[in-house]
Amino acid sequence: MDAFEDRFGLHEFLLARGWELDKYSEPDDAGYPTTAEDGWHYPASFAGTAVHDIDDVTPKSLSCRIDYDDELTLIVRAAGNWKGCDEHRVVEHTFPADNLDELHLDDLATLLNTLETQARAADVRVHIDCLFFGACGEYW
Ligand SMILES: [Zn+2]
Image 1 (tube, protein in one colour):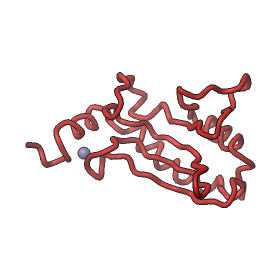
Image 2 (tube, rainbow, N blue to C red):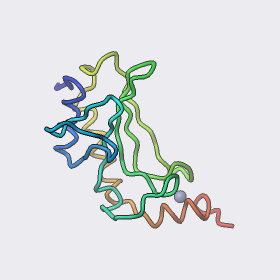
Image 3 (spheres, helix red, strand yellow):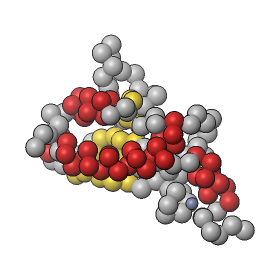
């Protein structure tokens, strides 16, 4: 089973799947992340629909980052709203590890196969509807 050598290995793995570094990142000349805070997102989320980026409103793309606090953890967040019903809010998946060598490519690929498919099929209008009009099926 393959394992990630480090976050650069994770970076290459994600970019090969169509992911990008987050927009606030300042990559080096080769395009690699330069800080531990840099994360990645999946731009094909919501069928790649372009929407205005409004804090706490715009549904979040499928994303991934490494949390170096307390315990080293790889965090994958499914596409969705920060709050709302179970179907449309962000669901977080974590991979705890003592070091990045323990993050196994096969396990992450299996999860991403599912989450990328869900993210591409997600309808941004349905998510915004859910956010503004309440949890699905509970319109007031
Ligand atoms: Zn909903």
